[in-house]
Image (tube, rainbow, N blue to C red; front, side):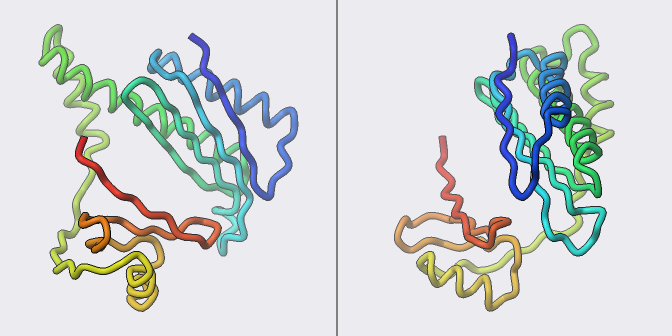
Length: 183
């Protein structure tokens, strides 16, 4: 099955050579997970403070029942692409390992391989934080986020929807709102 690859760019001229590299790298991801149907590749050049973080590549792959994403930054767009595809490969292997662990429950020694993968990429929770949630609307949440100096996200109890929401600041300076649903 071939992956439908869509390339989007912001503040960056996408050359034919770069397009070829993106298609070659991203379409090769189906070697790791055949269920990938679509891939979105966002290429951007930003005004980051550090020259090593100016070129940004974000790859999102979708299939039936999953979405996997990797975002990497570098001084060179091709280097960022290579790092992002490597990161996505690791995430695909981890996803497959967890999926196989649930389905096979250790048949054929796959449990040992899964434990190896989990040990390599086991995340560390460095801090846990509890805080009271006061009901507020979206505009008040934006104000609170800015008053607290939170530059990336803010968790709040949305009084209108009567649910916990996450407000986040997007790269273009606008805001996004995540409204989780139990499904």
